[in-house]
Image: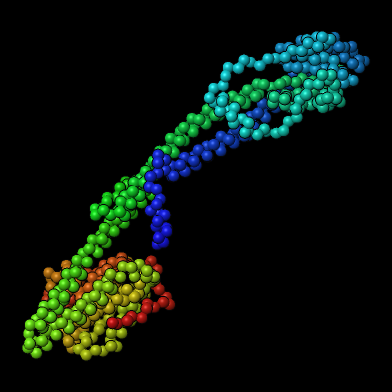
Length: 554
C-alpha cells in the first residue's frame, strides 16, 4: 500500500458533524426531485392558456349578442350604410355596464364613434377602475414574489397601447371585423396584465355597418394564476417537510448503522489488546444486515487467525527449545568429557539436532508462507483421478529398496470429475499422505499403500491407507496438530510434525475436510492407518483436454 494513500486515509476527519455525506446526498436527491416536479408545474402555463381561451370565447359570445342588437336598433333600415350614433352609444353603454367590459364602436370609415370608458364623448371624462387595497403579503406570497421573476413567460405577447385618437387601423382585429371577419387577440399591458380583445362586425342584412371591439384587462386571470401557484407552493411546503423528514429517517436507517460498523472496524484496527464486538444488524433483511454479518464473520476469522498465529508462535518457540536444549547439553558435556567414544556420541546427537533444527525451520517457514501463497494461487478445475494416477505412477517408477507396492482403485463414477483449486497444493496434500503411509509401512515388497477415489453425492472421497501399526486411539484427535508426531524414537529429528497440519490447512482452504482413522481386518484388529480427504465437485462435472500439473515427489 502506498504510504501517501495510507497517510491521506489517516488524516481523513472521522467526525461527520450533524449531517453525514450520505444524509446530505439522500436529502439532495429527494428535494431536487420534488423541486423539479414543482418547477415544471409552475413553468408550464396550460392553466393560464385555458383561462385566456375561456375569457376570449365569453367575449366573443357577448360581442355577437351586442353586435346583433346594434345592427337591429342603431340602423335606419335595409338601405342604411352607417350606424345611428346616438342610439348606438346609448345601447352600447346600457348593454356593457353590467359586465364591466370596455366596448368600442368603429364606423365604416374606421373612426371611433363610441367608447364605454368615456362617460361623455365630448368632455373626454374617462372611467378607470382602481386596484384593491394592498393588505401586505404573507410568507407564501413573499416567497412567490421572489421566484415569480424567475418563471419565464409562456410566450411573447405584444404590448397594448391605448392611443389618444383611436382609429380602427390601430387594431388589427378591428380592421378584420370591418372586413367581415371575427377576430380575437391577446396582448399585455405595460404592467404585465393580460389584455384580451375581440372584434365582431356589426351587420344588417349582411351589410357591414361597423366594428364592435370588446376588451378586458384580465386581472382576475392573474389573480387566479397567482392563487393556483400559491396553493401549489403550499402543497410543496408540506411535501417538502414530509420529504425532509422521510429523508432523515431513511438516512438514519442507512447512515447510522454504517457509521457504527465503520467505528467498530476502526476500533478493531486500533486493537488496544481487546476484542471489539461488531454491532449486530443481522435481523435486518437488507444489505446493512448482510454487511453486519460479513463484518462479524470477518472479525471472527481475524481474531481466529490472530489466536492461531499466537499459538503457532508458542509452538514454534517450544519446538525450537527442545533441540537447542539438547545441543546446549551436548556442548556442555563435550567440554567436560575427554572420552573419545563419548565425544563421538555427543557429536552424533548434535548432528541429529542440527538436522532437526534445519528441517524444523524449513517447515516452519513453509507453513508461515502457506496462507499468502494459497491466496495468490490461480484456481482452476483439477481432475483428481488424473492427479492421483500421476502420483502413484511416479512413486511406483522410483522403486526404492524396501518400499511397499502401490494399489490404486478409482470407481467409474469418480472419473473425469473436477474440483476447483490449485493442482500444486492438492498434489502436496496427497504426496504428504503417501510419504506418511510409506514411512509407516513394514519393509518389504509384500506391503502395500492403498490409494482410492470414489464419489459420494457431490463430493469426491480420496483415501490413502497403509499396512503399518495404525494410529493409537488417543492420538486420532491430535494427529493434525502442529508439531505432533507418533513415530519410533529412532526417527526423531527426521520429521517436524507439520506435514499433516499443512495438509489439513490446504484441504480446508479448498472447502474440504480431512480425517484420520484405522483400517480394520475382518476380525476387528488394526490393519493400518487410513486418511480420508473429501473435496466438493465443481458444477462442471467433466474437464476435457486439461491435465493437472505433473506431480513432483520430494
